[in-house]
Image (cartoon, rainbow, N blue to C red):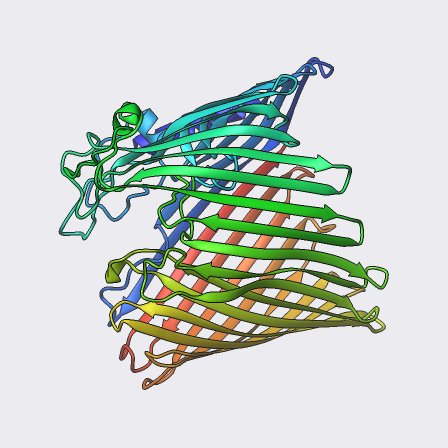
Length: 565
């Protein structure tokens, strides 16, 4: 009940802001959008008593993006994304939340970022982005400040990056400490241009945030320091370089000690004990950007003990050499972009074996004629950690290739578009149970045929997809086919559409599963800036011998109302 009341209060506040009149257009300008989204979901089952709902039974979301400009130099960007749902939905109960707890909920995103000339504040949800080896992808709820008068640059951010979760053995919830991030940088230059900065990031678990210690989860603490330099030479040549060092303590409560003189010098800043590691990383990238040709080179080293505390995940113990290129040929009818390089791991011979592998990502697009174009992509991606314990080891390599030709032509009253998609991929992953690599191969073929009528506002689409996965645990095959019809009424203000799909799913050793889905959607443009959407989805799943006589039917209703200002 409190969540719904809070939603109404916040929505009322946002609506009151949006409804303000622009009495002085030369001084006050307000623009943005607000949307209300509501979903209802239910299901019924036969012979599948432990079926788990795929969606919340009712979900209310409110999204608002707006910018208030006062005069020439002062602006207030505002973002509100709130919901009535609990993030920790699998817990039997949650403590009563106050307004601040609700706003900090990771399912919500509320930020107010006032800016005046060269100064900007960040209040609420934010993601500090300093450099590739310090911080850049970890959202926090807190406060921040950025100053950039002239060539002086200063930033500071502080907030919670992870909420505390009490452990629960019965529900297999290990728990988590509340985690905080402190970040600061100082330097010379411009935020979006040439600059030199010194970045300092610290992450810390609050051991007092839980009444019971988490299960097999130790409190951590870490700090990363990096000088970062990026600049331009002329209009086309760019350079970016960074060297970072880190100290990471994987268990603040460890009683093992390190007998070194320098420990006392940093004891007030970070906890250092027998579980601590210190290491460094380096990244340099050079780019030459021309109109029709681009070329770049990059080298990256990440030590096995290095941790950029402002990033969620990073592959360590690697040395990369990579070349990036892009070109436009034959009057831009052929566009090529991509990168290729060599990755080496086990740099300090701490593992039983080392690997060297090619890392690549290429894309090609060719306009063969006015009617025919072809695109192709290839990627090679790998990830591994440096864990010594077998049950913590992660190592995988993925190779994929896709080819997508598209042919379109026009007859008297029809516009035809035919598209094919051919793809193949292999996925090698280390399995800790068998202590060996398992290989998964996947092939997929797709056909898409679109018909657009010129005399009536009717659009028809037919599609078919075939997927064949070969896995050590058993093969998986799926054939999916269906159609979509769309029409426009009342001077294109109302646009209903209907889609129907059937999928046959085969698993090795079992009879076929059948999935049927129906979707009806209607879009209504009330005014140029006010839009209403309605969607109904039905999905029926009849299982084969993998779950004898099991049937699941799901219904989902979605409503949305969006207003632009």
